Amino acid sequence: MARLSTGPSMLEKGAPTGEVAVLAKAQGVLKSDVTVKAARGLSHFGEHSAGWFALGLVGAAVDKKRRKDWLVAAAGVVGAHAASIAVKRVVRRPRPDHPSVEVLVSTPSKLSFPSSHATSTTAAAVLYSGLTGRNLVPALVPPMLASRLVLGVHYPTDVLAGAALGGVVGGLIRRKLKRR
Image 1 (cartoon, rainbow, N blue to C red):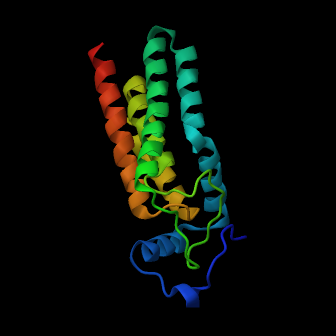
Image 2: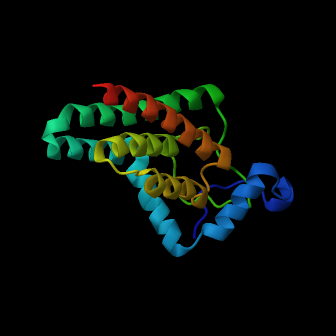
């Protein structure tokens, strides 16, 4: 697989340590042709929260009785994504850049913390769980978080922080929807 980022060699940067070492190990364990293809699909689906927003619109079209709730939830997913972008611009943590990590997909920015994919996915899972009556979090969140590591575009704390932010935003909006 082609490496999308270029930079100093392993000798110039040294052996990976800390989160880079964890990311390199996770990528080494999880990466295969199948997982990279799936991870790229998740990456495209979750880009700018578009796929999750579209699912909310489908929910609104199908569940006419709760159309407004679905629209609020879909807007909440976009709001969670926007919150992650705001945090990214404050924190300004650069994406992983070490020869031990393969970057396997392009990204719209060079900022890493928190993962916007993790944020919007977790918000969608929390919000849509409330509307479907099924706990979607275990089925949706771990694959998206793992995909960001497989693709080499986030550190582990990026995806964990993104999931936490998405959980908080999704939980707050879900609580308001429940009160109605």
